[in-house]
Length: 227
Image 1 (spheres, rainbow, N blue to C red):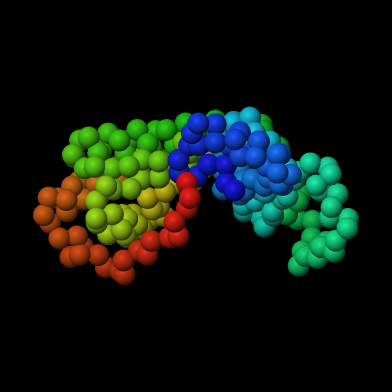
Image 2: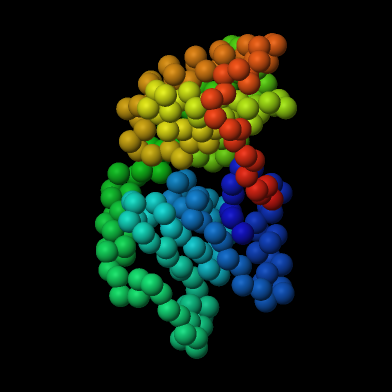
């Protein structure tokens, strides 16, 4: 299970899950491939004080180099000795070397603090636009991975429109932003472009036909997550 995606766990949910798994002798695995070190160096589970038996990391820990890591309690990890595990990259060392260097750089720069700050600015910006243009929106996600949805039946139309128009301005972005330390210098460019789109969406909500402005097929909804 993921530690957190869009909605923060409530009522000590993770701790209760941990208690159940211990009682039932179930291995608890946290998928941290997305949350990773975005909020806490070492994994989001540290923020909630709940330690899994296994945790899975990937993507950003190699800074673009292909790498996935499975870490966990010694007695669980030792089970691998009783099975055969193969891999396409059996003896490849570039990914692990990149991961070690990336983790050192993250720790040195305290990257999680920087991307949390960037994400908070983006959330506050979205919120201010919603108030300014009287458009109902929902802002969710980790501060380092903010997500925006419109409380409207046209939400997918607006998502498609935003992606389409931002690409014209050489900005690759949708309604979810995976914050990077490099984004800081581009925030003003993004804010300027996005406000113009938000103003247009306000007109769509007030009767203007969004279909006239869509140049590509409508974005498809992804699979629904439990959280």
